[in-house]
Structures are given as structure tokens and as C-alpha cells.
Image: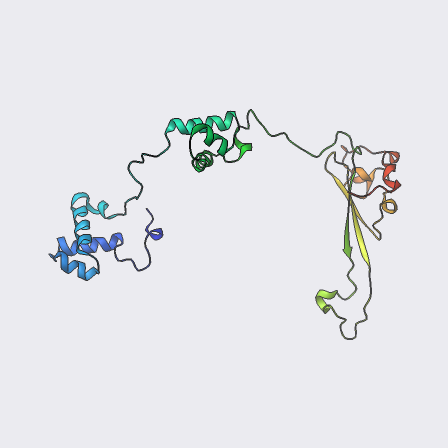
Length: 245
């Protein structure tokens, strides 16, 4: 047992302190009362540790576990097995299992947590696997996802994080506007294309190059060979004012 976690800083009877106390009685011939007064403890405590040392040696001076030797109300192995069986087979919750087995719901929950079955999705992955929900399409261009990120421009000489919210002396305030980063994802290979534009309108920023919606670069020549060019008419519905998202 780790004594750093069980003894307070001013403890007198650490294992080493108990050994010194026992030596005072058994080796130096001190009386029980004198030893108790020296270590500021009760005489019964001195006698207890001396008896343990005589019976068990230095091992008897260690801390003992406070766990009971017998627990009459402990759930039997058969009861634990029944809880686990119902969880795996019926996939019931703790309250339902407690009603069927006659155990307390807190006891059932402790058993499930100890067995790693606290979450229902971990009850039996082999026979009841969660379906893989991957957001992916069979053909490039079947679904095109568009996101627009609005970024404020930074004027020459630095923005408000350098000069503060107000105008700095001798610095004329200039408005540089915003830039909009458009991201297009065709949901086939999870490759995305992005570029900056001065406006956020979708119809004004649809790429004129019909192959760009399938790549992650602005150059069609640098696209991986596994990306198939998408004819522009396939995405012409985007230019009819379809919202982003």
C-alpha cells in the first residue's frame, strides 16, 4: 500500500515510526506507558503494534487493507453472469435488468461499468455492430457541399490588435473590406477545393473550370489521376441561386 496516500503529513506512526516505537519497548526496555507518552499515543496502540511485531515481524508493522474478509450482501457470480447475459442478449438498461433480476439499479450499473458494458454500443460489437455512417457519395458531383468563410481584411501597417480599437494618432482609418473563402467538397474522395473571392454570392463565384470541383488545387493539371473531370452542366444547378450548405 502506498503510504503517501494514506498518511497525513504529521503522522507519527508511519511504518518507520512504528518500528522505532517497538524497538523502544522490546530492545531498550521501555515500559508501555513511557513509550506511549514519548510518541503521544495510547498505551493500547503501543501494545497492539508490539504484539503484531512479535507475531509477524516487520511485515506486521505495515498498513492492512480495510476491505472486509466476507461480504454477505455481495452479488453472487451467478447474479453477475445473469446481468451480463441480459445486457448482451436483450440490450436492456440498468433499470430493466434490475427489475428482472431483483437487484438494485445502482448494483446493476456498477456491474455493467466494471465489465465495460456501461455504454449500450459496447454491449456486443461482433453481432450488433453500429452501421458505419460515412458521408460519402458514389459518384463525384452527385452532391457538392459549399461552405463560405468570411474573413476581414487587414490594412497596411496592422489592424486593431496593434493600434487598438480607436484610430492611432497620425494614422488614417482605411476600410479594406472582406475576403470570402469558398470551399467546395464533392463527397467522393473527401477532397476539397478552396479559393478567396471578393464576394460571397454563390452564382458569382462558381468556378468556370469544370474540373475544379473535383480537385483540392486551383490547377486542373495538379489534380490526382483518381479524380474524374466533372462536366460543367452537371453543376449548373448551383448557378441558379441554390443556397450554400
